[in-house]
Image (cartoon, rainbow, N blue to C red; front, top):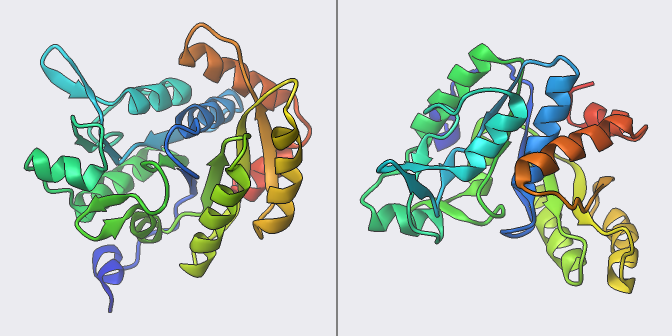
Length: 251
């Protein structure tokens, strides 16, 4: 029995998806929140989770996760300890931030919070930190958390130069680790793409070994909440969104 079996036992089947990025700053929080908003608009009781956030700001003397707040906005719920179990101040790798701040990130605590959310919601969207190889606690990576939670994976990529390499590397590692990768979303796709941006989607679709499930448009909005609402509305009008929802297990 490995460490994941000791932690998980035999949990009930839970419907949900884990959102990871090809790198930090690719817009996976906005994409995840827009997906949550879309499901909410369709009448799904959707929950969200940001297990570990580094680079948190302070409000009234308390750390808060802006990512978790955006996810919760999309889902139409409040941020709770289950939604954001670990808040770290330093904007560095979570394991390093936790060590500096004398915080022990425990996967068992994340798993317990995840199951409490699953008792309250019909579908859970979990957003990782950065990419799959980001360390969360000691030698444990985001990829280890994906395996622990047992949910399929959706990869969010950027559209520009270098994205083919980053995306193919991410999906290759995920499949090597026997993670269930359902597809790739390209986020922030411009209305007038450059040559690199126009050729990347086909290359990702053909080389990554998983389907390209959509190209989310670049939105000119006053803030991220407005962007989330606009993206959810856009997704709701696209015929291909049915394929996206089917692939992540939420038709």
